[in-house]
Image 1: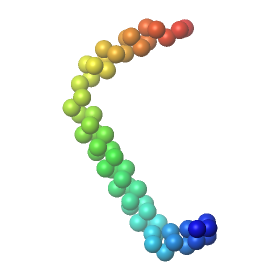
Image 2: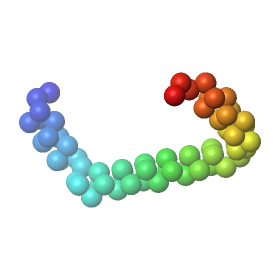
Image 3: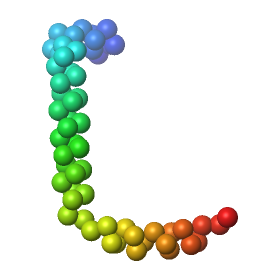
Length: 59
């Protein structure tokens, strides 16, 4: 498929509003998934891992 055919197919099947809506929907669901994943994880393990990371960095 050439680039012209791909553009014609894209223009025929998707409008800019549909593409924008699909991207917005995907971003929203991705943000919700990240928030849902991040909520139950305790921050204590992250804070415990931080000092060892910074301690061994050469200055």
